[in-house]
Image (tube, rainbow, N blue to C red; front, side, top):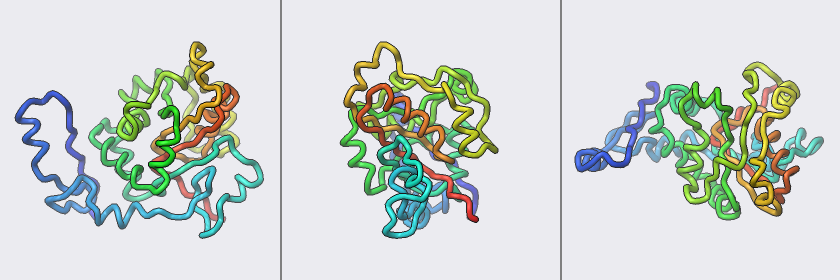
Length: 246
């Protein structure tokens, strides 16, 4: 299969020509089928298959099993976590272009992948606020945008709140660290905006992120929100890194 093509970025205020351009048929970024959506139905059926996952960390589990062994031994602070797909071909390439190459046009089709999951609509409806996982200022300057915020705005524009959960500390890169090391690396990384602490009491908060690797980042953020008074914290992630074998 060829590498993913870049979806056309649709921007507001482009005038008549832009509106006409948006009406032209597009090409599937995965299989190159034309005409078709940026991610065609055939590719979604093939690559965005819903599989049984742990209720709290979204790692794939055998049918009929609600929680993985790790979450049974040490329950995380997330009440529920939904992942649309595993982090592998072709999603790793699509997410990489979206996240690291500044191809913001991926926000809508990737959010649509997440929206296809059977639990997504219910979690969005139940949440008082939808919180994108924040980036530290240094990382935001480096990347130019927050990919989690772009996804959240596609899913729930009216309830997305990027000013409640903050990341004042730029943590060293997480790549290559195991879960315990990642948790230590993230100490003090997140906080709630001090002037808004009262808003968390009894609230249901929904975190949104693009990729969940070990869960350390989401678990740390969820713990901060629970300690600040949130009654329920859930998460939606586009892709979950599969558990290592052996």
